[in-house]
Image 1 (cartoon, rainbow, N blue to C red):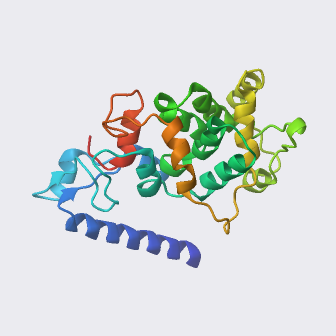
Image 2: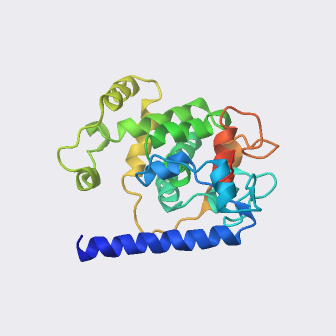
Length: 256
């Protein structure tokens, strides 16, 4: 094992030790989902009895994680933007470009929400996850566009000046080819009546990675208010088909 590998193991071990110390200091047992471990290359999970033995005298966490910012009793989309989304600069830049281009509010909202799957949940199939998150609360056109932008972004549209992003060549390599399900999604979307809404996400997505851009969520509060159906119980606390996903983002370490 080389010095670099040894150093990485040491850092990993140090991180595990720190996490173990934090766990002992918390009043409840905080658990990680199988998906979390899969992302670390581990197909495993600790059972309830094993955790109780490891942390004697403690109960499982079944509510808010004290390590995360506290959510209000009736959270709104704005609260999730501020307290749970890991990064919002790209979303705000995309929506700002769309707003300045004079696009309809539904398209601006689609740009604002297009990558919430990435910033709040998971990267893999983020367009589909993002669409499911918002589907009960927005116009069908918006959720459809968020879903299909995942496929459309890989295919150029010369009529709009949209080319295959150089960034993707840098990220995925020059020989990367989208999976067949992505190609099929693109073919269906290309013929759809809302194709342009999905494509506008791609157009305003492409140039929205400026680390020095000045953007503000306040610029979109009114658009969200008019176009996002905030449940009176609080986002994640209602009975919509996707409310459980918002609860998972709100309480990601609940035992069950």
